[in-house]
Amino acid sequence: MENIATLTVLENSMLRFIRGYLVRHGQGPTLTEIGKALGISSKGTVHRYVQALVEKGYLLHTERGWRGIRLADRIPHTHATLPLVGRIAAGRPIEAIPGRDELNLAEYSPDEHFALEVQGDSMCEIGILDGDLVIIKSQAVAKDGDIVVALVDEQEATLKRFRKLSADKIKLVPENSQMQPMVYEASRVQIQGVLVGQMRRY
Amino acid sequence: MENIATLTVLENSMLRFIRGYLVRHGQGPTLTEIGKALGISSKGTVHRYVQALVEKGYLLHTERGWRGIRLADRIPHTHATLPLVGRIAAGRPIEAIPGRDELNLAEYSPDEHFALEVQGDSMCEIGILDGDLVIIKSQAVAKDGDIVVALVDEQEATLKRFRKLSADKIKLVPENSQMQPMVYEASRVQIQGVLVGQMRRY
DNA sequence: CTTGAAAGTTCTCTTAATGTTCTCTACTAT
DNA sequence: ATAGTAGAGAACATTAAGAGAACTTTCAAG
Image 1 (cartoon, chains in turn blue, purple, green, brown):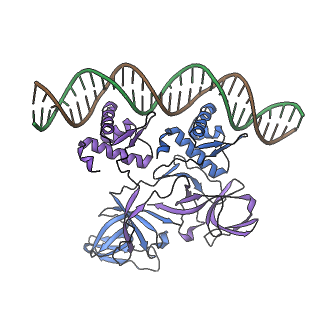
Image 2: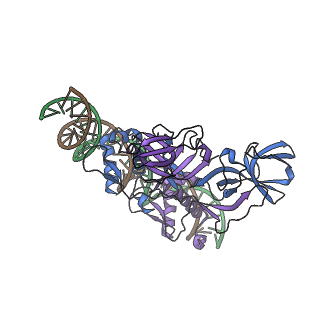
Image 3: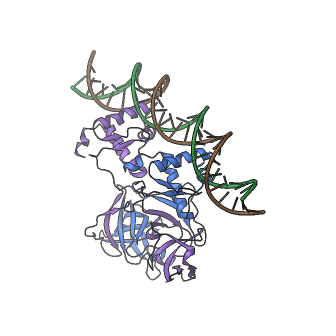
């Protein structure tokens, strides 16, 4: 945590860019490329910042030669963010996503969200598999088509797509063709929240 | 946080804001940002409150430089966690998962990991869909069967399952029956990392 | 090997953003 | 009336960020 404290906003941005570039290209960027990416037209300015990162221990530079910027072992610990290097599509270069160079994992506030582990295949056709974690925003009302955590008779829980049939009937729809939708009296069903995220570990 | 009671309402609000900001950004807010968040237009006023929190032992400030506000050691740092309520299986009550009541969103250290956004369907049969984010552990070596980010000829990237055919040949296998595996000379392929996580937003 | 372009290095000058200090004001409770 | 809380805002100081020119080094092509 202390480590990040010593970097300015721009140093941090530059480090993120350099880091992404190394993954995307397998070699270091030129000062001009760094400048272009960060909107700086002066190589001198870019050079100075790279030097600052080297002096602060975040970057190394090969002794001679072009494109010699490398990551040092010392990488800032930024709580709850990861560098978002870009978009990967087979057969293409990884392309940086303009304006998005960080993945913020702390965007879900714990007072409004909770997590659940999924068991079963009811939502597998949309990529929510057995064992996945889902992030739910706590709310009691859902829109037609939302994926909800629904409590039936205050007891049985399920993660399904919510369909409103009428004022007093709702349908909970699995995303698995082998399973049937279920229709309930609205009064039996309590919406606990709405799906906002999913994640899986490997 | 027992001593939080000795703060005024506003000091308390400010402390909460600063704590949240530090988690999301990994560095301190500017006085202007604090002011904007709490509806105070005067930097001078904000500064005075920050000083009060420093004097009362809740905050620290780096000796020099901007964005230097930090939490004092006695203040618990907010971690990027969500309550993990339990396991959800259709038709059953949500059951608590023994020993796991929190989902730690910050488990991937940024010095070893980066994220990528997936484009395409090459891994869709294992639930990695177009638009998903994947979390990659940086490493240059993979085991047979690992899902890897591979750079071919320092240029083309791909996320596929790694199969080692021989000492100098590897195969990259999609998880989509409509696509063919590709075989490469090992010297053409640079492993940038191995898949450790996946996530999706709704 | 030579040459020219690209990339890197050093330096000076400038501007904008952020932090600090201070004075004045208003409201509420004692 | 006084003290505490809370706010505005201005002037000043410090930090970060930027341009660009001149020079040096590296590399690739001929």
